[in-house]
Image (cartoon, rainbow, N blue to C red; front, side, top):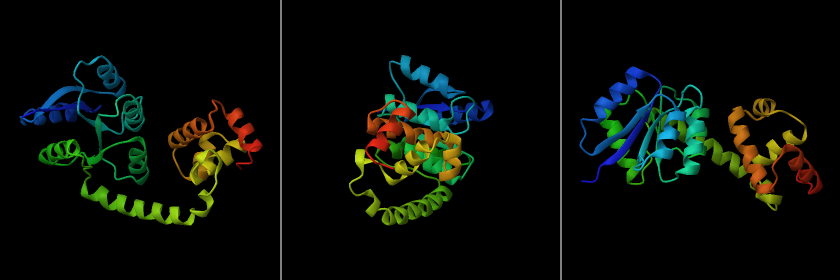
Length: 222
């Protein structure tokens, strides 16, 4: 039986040690490493001969957050599945986790057998989610679908293939607002706004706010 290589990224030492010990009882799982922060995780991934198949990633980490780390790791190692581990059932964190490429989302009080089942599930192409979070996600996705239906007309013939959400953020950029001010206006976190702006730059093929503003005005995007 081929083992599933797993790594744990958790700043709480007792929880990290306990999770490592519990995983060791399952023959199908091999623990690559257990570290206290995302920076150490990325260093381990960069130098590893055999990388983990699955990361159990805490969202609330010191320094680089679990969501920010997930975004960076998926850029470099898209084959690695990441299950977010959290004590929160927060809509914004759920949405951000989906955006940056997390495969699953589990609460920390899940029994170890559910965690291992989730590890198996992601390797079979599944997306494990704790029941309470699944209910929240259903409501979130329903709201998103309604919003998408209302914005269908806005999406026609948009320069640079910008989405309605990206155009709203670009409008704020043109108005000279900071990421924090934009976040308050569009009800997202500053980090999510920053990610949207990076995507806008990529689509517009620019590398600064000033260049994006000039091009947006010249092409009458906003």
